[in-house]
Image 1 (cartoon, rainbow, N blue to C red):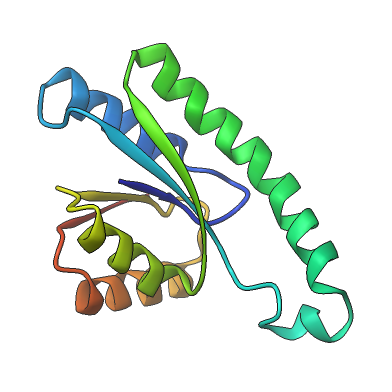
Image 2 (tube, rainbow, N blue to C red; image 1 turned 60 degrees about the vertical axis):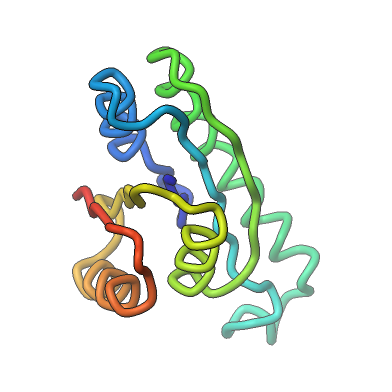
Length: 134
């Protein structure tokens, strides 16, 4: 499972997943586009939830394109899901629900404190092993 949390995408996680596929460690990848609830946060006070979702979807489209291209070039089979909710809880729920073998998180474009906070929450919430690439 590769969660995509921001407009930077998950190119390093896709490369790592392609390596795991080539080594026969995984047979399929699940990309999960994790979108925060549009009615949460400070921006909701100034913008409509619809416009916030459209803005986030357009930035995530470019991120998905890069990530999917890497997996397509490597011949890795994958599925794509779009989910809404708090990132860590949503990732942990889908990892448990889909019985993921591993969660590969590309944290290269996250700041130090956000990276640390996400990893700490995933460590508490997720029973699936998490590999954070940065």
